Length: 156
Image 1 (cartoon, rainbow, N blue to C red):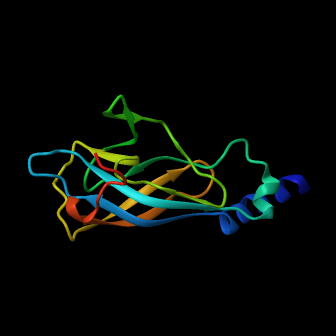
Image 2 (image 1 turned 180 degrees about the vertical axis):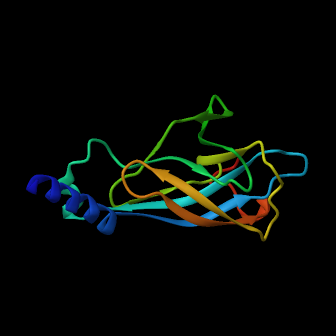
């Protein structure tokens, strides 16, 4: 029983001291007639000594996201340029590095909002729920911006 209480207290400490901080959450306003768009943000994962002691079986990861107002399908993609051709590859989870910031950018890693229920317009805001492996799910408030206001990380 004492061992169980110790484990439970450590798990509570993990939620208190470890964190995934989501910042700069942006949705691109899609072009007229296009039924999908991109979601971009920065994710910082910080860990303290107590969390390290938990010896989690694998790194923390973002497993997916939801924006019920806009879509029922969000995919995680990575943009790859091979032989001068840009392609998007879907992947199942986005692993977070300890004490580092992962930047989701146009022309790189990003989330695709598919089959939009409505067209998000510049100036609107939407709550994004991000599902994590071990730590409590996170939210960010995504602002919608015009494509021209959010340039790609490299020329497409």
